[in-house]
Image (tube, rainbow, N blue to C red):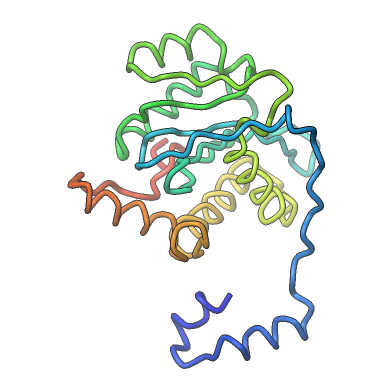
Length: 225
């Protein structure tokens, strides 16, 4: 919160911000972590560059009239960027590959993708897409969602801060609100795990040091369509 406020108020004192934050009882309660036997814990290989691994999964929601919405979330393991959040009534394996191709126009293709064993990710269309682009497909074990821990963490935040805070009446409205949340997540909010800077800025600085050409950080598949 202090990182955000000091952009507009350079002289703001972090102790005062913390005191007001505490007095207003704004702190979000930490969730209790489920205790698992050591055998169930599997560490994730840490990515060392942008586009090394994209993790993806689905999040479900619904409109006010009860019609189901499906959200495909794609995140870069290294930069923590939300590569894309696609929203539609239904998303097939072929639909997924088309969205990833559109994201790659601006970012390039990842070296690997990490998914669960859902039908969209084990379809012929998705497997052929990964093989055709030389992309390694990392499939987690069934019933082990924490092997895809990066996207699980991202999806929890996405649900709490966006889906649970809005009542969508139309698909168009849902896409606009979710796109705005994604821009804020990528471009405005500082993340402690990447030097207290927004993911898009962190990724751009890393690309610059690596000598890569800059790419547009926020365009989504929905905006292209």
